[in-house]
Length: 167
Image (cartoon, rainbow, N blue to C red; front, side):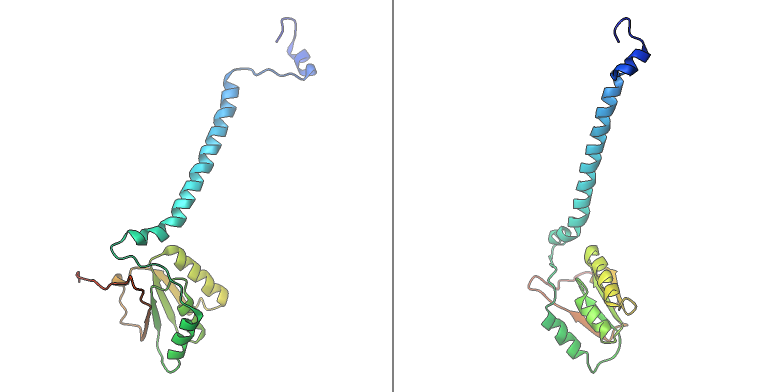
């Protein structure tokens, strides 16, 4: 403010001077917090989405997600034509087999390690209208009892090695 200028004259001129030097630094630090929060949130999101897909590669035996082809799904459904009882798909991936079995009238369950694939499978089952008879769980196949299932489906890949020494 110039020497003879009063606050009223200052308002009329349209120029408002900062009352303290802290107000400018406060505005700058708010932008810093915002940018830091956005970058941090983006990194957490990338970590949460990629970890379930990268973590299996860090195990002793890496089992990748390989979706079943439509022909494989048809063959499983054809094999189930004269069978009864609940079905389990070990390593159910995106749930194609379980959903097809549920559509064929079987109570079906899928076990998968990747939580994103399990959530996607649950969504697909809901979308296809079989969420009542198709269930999906996040679990390791070594920690599940399969005695209650009459039909067991498992697709092997070349990387699959059955080396189970602990019982």
